[in-house]
Length: 151
Image (tube, rainbow, N blue to C red; front, side, top):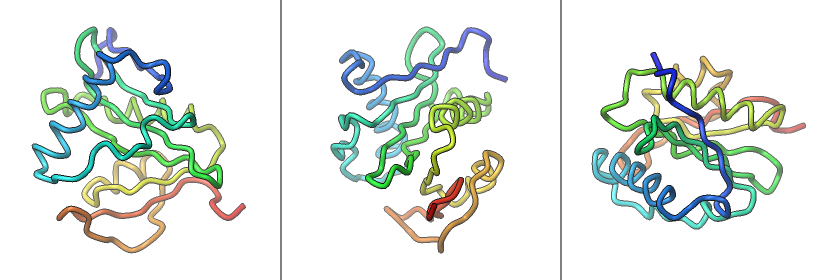
């Protein structure tokens, strides 16, 4: 159960201070690159796009969980980099952050590429499988969508 003191933060890149951005990147790299052993270009240039929103949970210190929402050219919201710090897992943080993200997205269609073992988690947030499973960086992924994509 999330602590009552945890707060959801949201920001564009332009409004992030350097220390916070450092902490968010450290969490992403610690989990995706180090823990999951996937050396890939974590800095893909999309963090700084004007339409990108960064959302994270904090309990007064380092971030507990994070995700970003990208604005694809067709107006679709692309949710990605969903991560929870190892010491904070099992506390409901990912669900709370996903709920906040969907409030930001609103009625816009949204997509994500789920690590396949997390498909059930995303289904609980209204996402449906939208394509075949594929392997990226040695990890099975499943494309998912929420809302009308071809509207």
